[in-house]
Length: 297
Image (tube, rainbow, N blue to C red; front, side, top):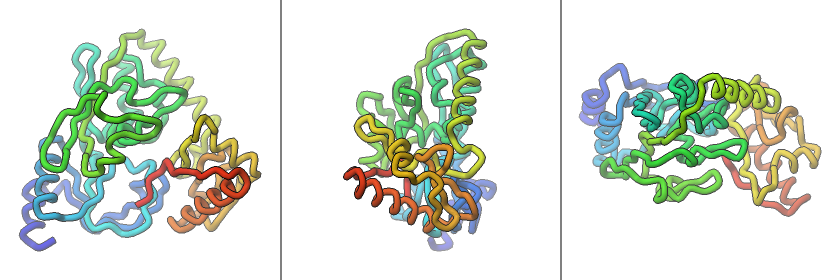
C-alpha cells in the first residue's frame, strides 16, 4: 500500500481499529501464526462495506478472518480484515439479527436469556457466526443453517441479502466455499420459544458432553477432517492406532482422534506434517481420501 491508501484506511476505520505488525499467534485456535502487516477491524456492517469497497477498488489483496478457530496460518500476511468487532445482536420477537463476529457461545447465551431455542447443539463450538455460516458448522445432527433464514453478504461490489435457499448449504459447506469473493457480515435467524430453564439445561448438557470427549485443555482447530458418507474419521484414525502420534509439537489427541492439538509449541509445519501423515496412513490402509475441514492459509 502507498501512503495515501494507508491514510484513507485510517479515515475509514479510525486509528483504534488498525494494528500494525499484529501477531496472529494468540488470535487463532491453534495458537500458531505469523504476523499481519496490517490488521483491519471494522466495527459495524456499514464500515465493513466501505472498507471492502476501498480494498477492492485498489485491488489490494487481503484475508478475512472471524475468530480463526478453525484456521491454520502458515505464513505472514500483508492485510488481514478481522470481523471480531462485528458483534451486534438484534432481537425482534423470535427473529434474530446477528453480526459475523459474535461467538457461538455468546449468541447462545443471549438466546437463552430471551427464551429462544434452536441453536443449542452448537454451544461449545469455538467459532463465530460468520465462520459458522461459511462452514455450515454443526454438531449432534444440527447445523447452523437449520435456523438461518438469510445472510447479509458483501458480494465484491455491494451489500446484499441472500435467502437461505440460495446459499447452497451442504455438509460443512456453502456457496461461500465456491464464491470466495463473498463475505458474510451477518445472519438472520428464526428460533422457537422455550422455557429458559430447559434451554439452560440443554446448554449445560451439551458443554459437559463436549468437554468429556474433546481436548479443550489444548489449543486446536476442532475437527481436522470432514466426515465422509457417514464414516466418523476419528474412529478410523483410532482404529489405525494413531492416537497420540506426535510430530514436533503437534499431536493427535488421545481424547479425540479427530483433533490435532498444539501439544508443545507446535509450528504450522508440524501440524501440516501430521495432517499429511494421517492422510497417507488412511489412504494406504483404508483407501479413503480425507478432506480437510479446517482452513489452511
